[in-house]
Image (cartoon, rainbow, N blue to C red; front, side, top):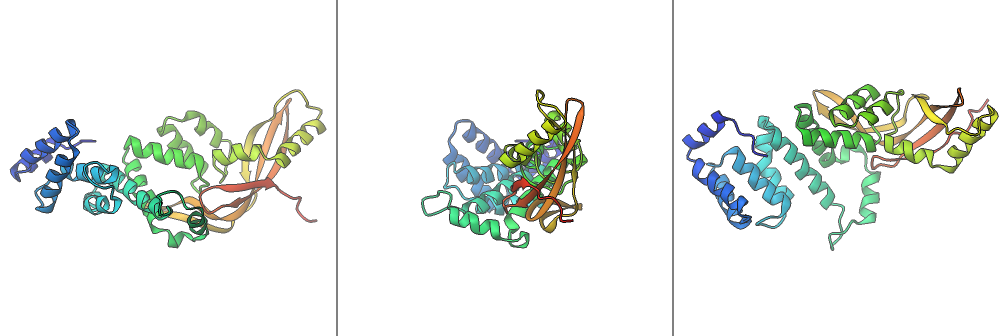
Length: 295
């Protein structure tokens, strides 16, 4: 985590922070988190702390080491660093904000409250600032090449319904070390994530339609595979979690209905299947076989 430049270290030493930073490092190495926390908090309070010490204090708050877990306190330490452009702080701030969002969904026993989760799913994007800002800070860190942030962006784009164009998603997947995911999304435009794609193929009606069309072209002994994807019109009632990261990014679709045409291939033949989707408010979607258009 420590990535402080020589110039930064010299500046910290001139400010009298080196001795305290060494003490914090030593305490962490010995797993004396109480001492690390007390030292770091004192330095932050009198504004003598280095960037490294501030980020250590934030991580102690986030992980509940040497102090009770407190994502909000971590946010207060990290936000000035993140706004100044410290990439690691941007990444940690994203974790702090997401932690606060998750805390709001728990019951008195710190377990997930299904009623609160359902209420959250019903909220429009404008009422979900913690989710949006958490995603923004992580995205900014990923844009600057921080591996952990890139991994999170790639994972989220592989699992959540997104308005990010397929070509951009493929680039993120490649950066995140997922070339097979990149190849899958390059089959064509699709809002459904790769996770929803797998789930849709397990839908009994969709599976039956694929088998019916295979039989119709006299192909029974070969498994059909997706060879192309495409959108069948615009998203109806779209509500995206929009990230302001240079250009606006339609990161996660929270509400809306849309249709996609997936082309399957088998036995040298191809056939289309139209699938309808309904966003679930949590980044997922329910898939069903689309009804034929009314004539």
